[in-house]
Length: 334
Image (cartoon, rainbow, N blue to C red; front, side, top):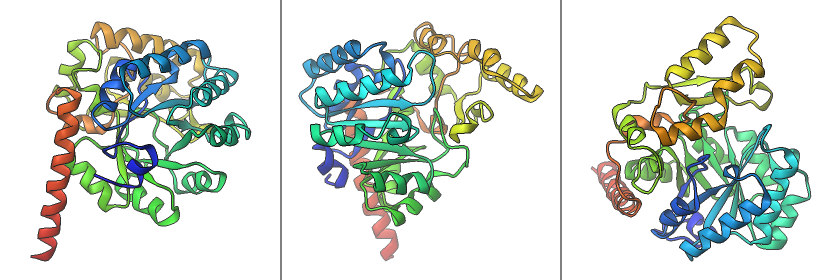
C-alpha cells in the first residue's frame, strides 16, 4: 500500500503508532516497525538525553526498520524546555527517521534553530495538530508532514472539539503536506475512511495499547475490551487553556475527583497534580487498578474487541482497508 506517507518515511504500510507515555518503548516500537508500519519511541519515558540515546540504540538492535520519536512540547516539571531541546538534538545526532511534535509548535516552544537542524541531519519532522491554522503554520515553517487529530483522540485534543471527519478534509484542502489522520482510528474501516477524506495514512495509539506486545497489566487489556465510546471524559480545559488543549481520559475514580475539583471553580495545579501525575499512571499500567490514575485513551476504545499480536493487527487493518475501499467503490457505481 503506497501513499505519500509510506514514501516519506520509507515504510510499507501507512500506519503509525502515536506517542504513549511509559508504553511506547523500544520493544513495542520495534514490534510495530517490523510489520512494515511505523513504531513510536516516546521521549517522555526518559529523564536525560543519554537515556533517550540508549533507547534509540536499543530500538535499532530490535529493528532495522524506520521508527519515529515523539516529543511532547508542553509545560512539564519533569521535562523542562532545555531537556526537550536536548531530546530533539539527540534524535538529530542519531539520525532517526522522524520526530513527532505533539503540543506547541517546535519553532515557538523550543526555538527556531531546531527545524533547520533536523533538515541538515536528514530527519523528518511531523506536527500533530488539532486546528487548520496550526496545519497551515506547520507547512509555512517547514514541517515535513502533519497528523490531524480530532477531539476523539485520547491524550491532549484541542479544546475546539472538532471531530476528525470534519477537521481532516478541512486541513487537506488547505495544505499540501502528507497527512496522517488521528482520533478514532482503529481498523481497516478507519484507514479506508481516512484515505477517502484526504489523509495519506493513520496514526493510532489506543488501538496499540490493546496488543499483546504492549506491556500493561492484563486487567488493563480487559478494561479496554469492557468499555465503550461513552466511557471517556474531557477535562483540564482550564489548566491547559493557554495551550488550547484539554485531556481525554478514561472516566474513572480519578477523573471523577478531577471533575469535582473543576466544578468547584478556581482549580490550580497544586490541587490537581497529585491526581494527574505521570508517575501515578505508570504504576497503574503495571498494577492494573484502572480507577487510580488518569489513563489517556480515546473514544475508539468502544471499537476495540480483541488484543491481538501487532503483526496480526497490521495485516488485518491493511487487508480490511482494501476490502472496504473496493466495496465503497462498488456501492458508488451501483
